[in-house]
Length: 366
Image (cartoon, rainbow, N blue to C red; front, top):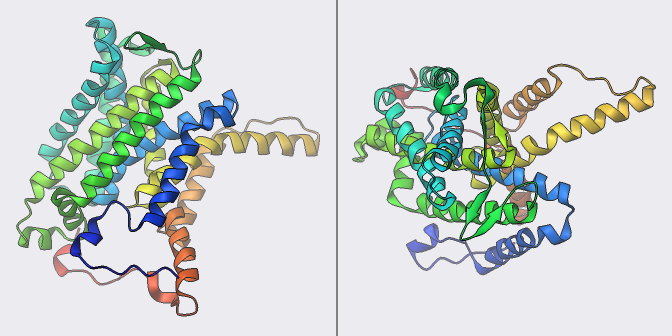
């Protein structure tokens, strides 16, 4: 059992609780940097995919996990970031080092524009509004064919950074390191955001808008900032996703992607940064696991590999329902419970992580 003796209020907002915890994250970063030398080319590509999904998950986590605002339309902002990044490179001839942050800025401004008329919506009504935006953006991509390529889509050019050409298929290691650097920078900024007054305002709005307003938090402005930051990070993930896929169309960012993103953060651990990474692992590797299991079952039964339409989405749905019923805190929440059990044994109480069922009367109708 590790006891942390606090001598200042600053201990509650430190980047790491203690040096022992920091060492584990430093070791994890070293292993991540060395991954291309430890893994094969195929696995490097899969880990890159996990990092891109984790970046998108961090974007959605700011809105849903930290601020408590429901969203079923974040695939639209993946599309905004992806298309704006490629269009700025091809039409204006701007380098990636400028188009990449601009794509996040454009997606962030689009999120603020969505937040302005929807700040008074809550729960299912906000989810329906964001879902409608996702459908509308998908149709707009088709209608704006001269700019977006319509149903034919666009082809992402090679990344040029200070004379260095990066192509995901030719140089998977370079693309992996670029993605890792971006994820680490966003992760550092995200962690500091949670320690800032704005991050505390997000948590106050999430827990009770009435109480947050009583403490002087401008709820509408805080929601708009949450939407802007969330969609900006999601737009960055969309830009990387376009270069990872190589070619993309409006169908690349359909409604199912929004649902998978929501599943990712719920299964990983809603409200925890770690949850975005755990959920990204599930999203990235579950299709491969299902394909391997399907081939194994077909070989065992002598029927060959049988493709079942909709199997992947059905499994995603079952996993989401099971986690909501039996482990609402997600994978990282389960790890917290196991770790706390061993740290406090034999003083661990079964009801320590039980969810509270008391609400303000003003919050019950939402």
